[in-house]
Image 1: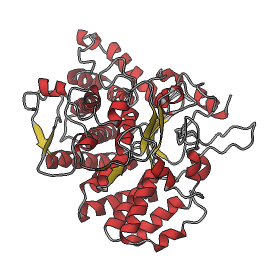
Image 2 (image 1 turned 45 degrees about the vertical axis):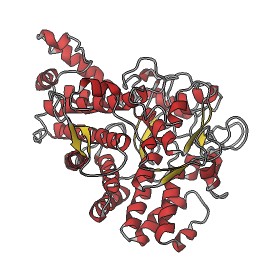
Image 3 (image 1 turned 120 degrees about the horizontal axis):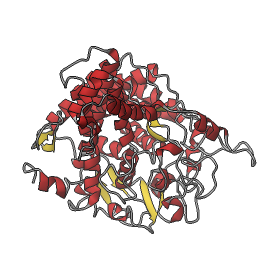
Image 4 (image 1 turned 90 degrees about the vertical axis):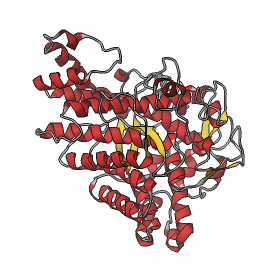
Length: 513
């Protein structure tokens, strides 16, 4: 039994307690019959949350905790059986696949084959369009319920605790809309109608808002969130704090582009780096490095929420009830998983070839055999027994501080501040290679290309390659270990690299066709 396992057994997390408290309070305060009735939509109604909050503000906190639970819960994309329907990390895999940096090298069970062939995401009748659409709009509606219960979009709650909840809800709403813009549009064109916007839980069907209107809401929500969360001391990393909200907003500004927006992204990432208290993961933390044959690696594996380089994630325990249907159930050979049983996801061979021999990250992807270039030494259950972990207790990461260093380098270079770009890039690369001085000689496009390459290498398998592809207006070209479209150059705004509005939305919303 490892030290990490013992630690996780004895720690009880507040993010699991609050939803239970919320449900108990709804029952305890419920002379009113409606508190005990289950809504057909499977959501608490605005009235239920608001009324319960009058008696005990913890109910609103519990509702916010429930939103975070949706991020890793199975079936949140509207299916009961699909083994790729498990929240945010499920769509991280979708996006890594579409970017081309993640290769499906062996296919047995067909969970991702249609996506890698660009069939599923371009067919409006396919569930792989419906699942992320439903998931993110479900988060939006849940956030709207919390915001409404606290007084509405234009209200700043009097209680500081409620200000913190409002800040989290607005950040989650913005995060959801941002991901919808990434997945369901080809590029940033301010005048294009793209998505229906809902800011109130009681709004009827809405027509598409323009890109500008959607991003105005995203920026407004996150700006307010950062202010509201200024004094928030979170109890667990699954909660959005000021620095996470800053990180999301930095991604938004970097995607929008233009000198003013890039300068704002630069300031936000610089603040997180300077004041967040997070440190870049060490070489020992990013690649399997056993102390000895009989002593397991207790710091690697990307499996522990306590990692100092993680800004946002969730501490999963057996109580969460996750198993095969999970990110670990798709990505880790040391879990009872599809990765172990025959759906192998690996690093693109050309991207692997671009990693220098003295870079420790090259060891994350062993070469040879059926699992060649799979992330066997990056993501793993700490026991490292093939197929052993059946019930998930390894954690999920949503955001790392390394992302802030890379994004700061990117936007600094794009705004002409190459000195700052090099400083941020070297801070990361010096943890991965014995000598990062080569960066000093890079300028112009060569510097931008290196930052983009380092982003793809460092964040492989974490759902960020697709965002970088679109943000940098790059071209995807698959290496020889993919099963289809090898060597085909596909620009970032090609229809094959985006999703389409699903059939059910078209059928149920008269404003969408």
